[in-house]
Image (tube, rainbow, N blue to C red; front, side, top):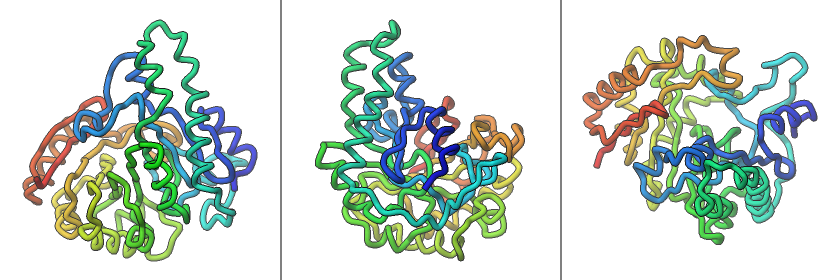
Length: 311
């Protein structure tokens, strides 16, 4: 699926490749919890999370979007780094194998923290046994055809499951069983013109497919439903009230309004000024709140995020 130079680059960036199409990496907040005792906002807001025991991984490295704000490398971003991201024809690895390898490789990445004097040994020992898995990291998880089985395998091992999707595969979400404990849909823009400029989709009718996902979102019961709006300053923040229409259709339990971070490969696509200040996010979220009726429940400056809720 990936040419060797791309695999080598990802390995250098501390990704560990699993089989033919998956990967795992230590989350930034797992590291922070180990060395500084700081918790991720998900732990503070949602309750069923322990930052040091969260396994961040993807079951599918390919993606059908080429979002300008994405930190990962896209085909063509660097000279010589060219491959077919989508559609990617590859035989699917077994879900049990993917989960077991992710746990093993994550442990190998964590083992160096054992000798770090800043790390509490009790917290370190706990970190080796993940109690939750977030299917995000990179790529689009819903392109993995055995996603429901993967969620089931994680649950067999006692893990809480989070899934982050770009909403491009409504037919997958509609049939997904079991659903994850928490389901995120990322929103790149509030209208089609801006969406096309930011998401740069490789799939046909991507905007229509996203709208279909938002339409079926209320029917996906038994999971906590969250919309994530990534704000890119000067690109998708001119009409915050527009997002309320998407919220009215999708009726999420929560909305995370989150700042784009000028990191990774996105630095070659966007100017540093596109990264909002926390004050920008607070102001933007207040306008979304007034237009939608959703209420502010919290803010977390280290991640540049504000939480809105309809509850």
